[in-house]
Every structure is written in C-alpha cells, then in structure tokens.
Image 1 (cartoon, one colour):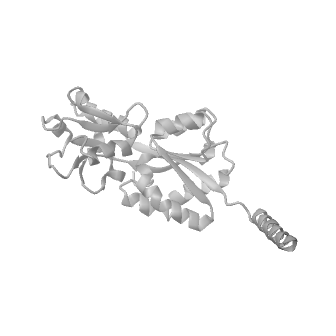
Image 2 (cartoon, rainbow, N blue to C red):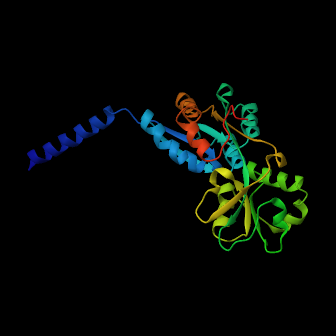
Image 3 (tube, rainbow, N blue to C red):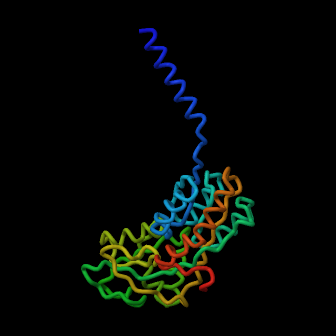
Length: 254
C-alpha cells in the first residue's frame, strides 16, 4: 500500500515537473471595435496557428474600449473604428506611438429586415410613416453612430428622424435590433450587414467623414512584439483579403 502511494506521488511530481518545463503559451488580449467581429473571427485562428499564441478578443464600441484602456484595462493591442481614439490614447501616453497603423476604412449602410419588406433604399426613406424606429450605434462613443448621425444631418433629415432613433451600445447591438425586428431600419457597418434575413443599401460616402480605422499596441502590454505582429498579420497577406471580403477599404485603396 505504501509502495503504491509512493508510485502515485512520484507520478504526480513528474507531471508537475513536466508542466513547469513546458513554456507558457502567450495570450494576446485584443480590444477591437465591433465592426471587425466577423473578420477577426477568421483572422484569429490563422494567427494562432502561425504563431502558437492564443488570442482573446474583447469587442465593443471604440469609445468605451478606449476609455477602459485609458483606465488600465489589460489590453495588449487596440483596433479602433476611428483614428481619433488611438490618437487621444497616444497623446495620453497609453499606446506605443510607432505602432500606430492604419488598417482599414469602414463604410455605413442602410439595413432592413428582408421580411416584412419596407422599401428603404436611401436615407430619405427613413421619413416614411412605416419606418417607426431606426437603430444606430450610440454616437456618444461609437464611431459608426457618429457617422450615422453625420449622414442624417448632411442629408437634412436628422431632426425628423431623431425621434425614431434607438441607440445600440455598439454597431453589432444596433444590427441586432434590425435582425430581431425591434426596429424597421438601421444604419450599420457594411462589414457586418451581410447577415441572414437582412437586406442593405449603401449610403453615399460623401455624407460622412471617412471612418479611418487605426490600431496600436498598448504601452503596458507584456507582449508588445506579439501585439505588433498581430497588427502586421491583419495588415498583411493573410488579413487583407479577409477584411476586403467583409467590405472594408484597405490602405492603398483610399
């Protein structure tokens, strides 16, 4: 009995020693705007297979994520839907300046449920009585919400559409309102609009400021080289075709 116990103890100690001998797999925490959700779901496993690292994605509105990073959230790298948020963090000393990288330009579209069909093909159609509620991301902290508001203002319909607005916490949340039928229409990112049960039409880019999307490595990251590698991966031969497939314009195209 004692001998059996000794053998078990020896096996446990050997397992512990082997585990300690194994190098820890680095984990990269990526804070990213919700508009890259679908694209990054494809990019993430490719990067993991190429590097052996593990990637944890934290998605949300750019403004809220930037605020969290500014308050010390454990992000390694930040992918913003608007460059101004990264530039504010750089001015505050929260990101590594030389890692600031333009990776995409986003676009907005009008989205409606395919059934029941309400003809919404241009911004003016949002004034129709049949369109009682319109979803956008909250302009207070979401770049796509700001772009939606700007497009409505430039089209001259903001004041009339404003009472109909339902605000999503981020652009994915705004799309969910459309998907569930909680609203008759929404203004969302092209990159997530190609969803089952959704029809969409482009919004004239002249109606809103360019959504130049920028990434940077967070200064307090314990894995700055890995964070920079992820940015290069997204901006490289592996990531660019995926971003393009989801409707993003890429650096060099605008």
